[in-house]
Image (cartoon, rainbow, N blue to C red; front, top):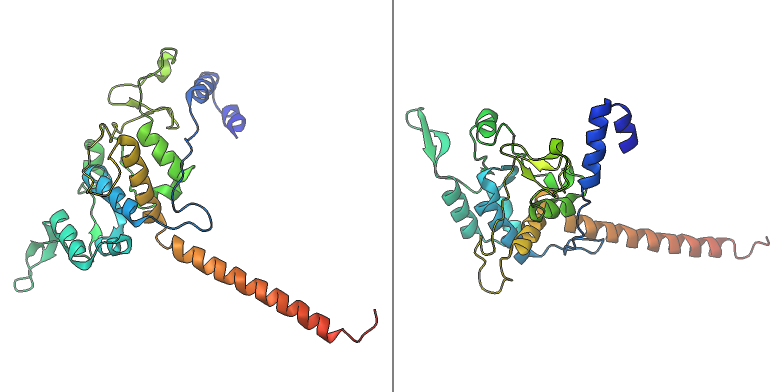
Amino acid sequence: MAALTIAFLMPREAAEHNAMLDFHKHPKALKLASDGPFGKFDRQQLQRGFAVYKEVCSACHSANLLSFRNLAEIGYDEGQVKTIAKEWSHEVPSVNPDTGEAATRPGLPTDRIPSPYPNEVAARAANNNALPPDLSLIAKAREGGPAYIYSLLTGYQNPPANLPKELQPGTGLHYNPYFANLNLAMAPPLTSDGQVTYGEGNPPATVDQMAKDVTAFLVWAAEPNLEKRHQTGWAVLGFLLFATVLAYLSYRNIWAGVKH
């Protein structure tokens, strides 16, 4: 595929593309509790990941396919969900039922998690003309999925000394060998251990742990029915196995007295 892409590039572009491939890294290995056909979500990790999203990622990224009430699925009770919605969205646009005039209201569990920007123009203006992607489906939308997200969050570094000049990060860009173009507009979101406060009974909030936790949360956000799908798949497989055995025994019984 890379060779096919290069074939359609101008000589200079092809050279830059080849150089880019030399410095690009494949995602790091990542193991999550939800991996594999028997995978289940770690609710405690999902809540830690939500805390990272809320305190760090939500400053730039929306998750507009998630409603606050969906957080009940990762272990928050009804009161906690109401509090999160109210504290997050103090002024949700509404209409005064008595006058019909525009008004605002506190956030409700039924509300979607809002975007930090009123529109795309404002989002680009605040991010060096780069549009921060919505994170609702990011774990499925990017090649490599969870491993890519984890690697990107932990992959920021100074450009290597032998990086060609044309690939050096420009103004407002940051070098990350796990990003396709090596340089991206998003500054390192996780900058220090303890950036997000985890409660008692949780592992230390190191940069690596926070990256794993928010990745796990985004995997859940992209596929909240993963556990049910696994359960259904195994139930169907068990039924098919039983039906196959039953069909074979029926076959033996029906043809038992017939010479072959």
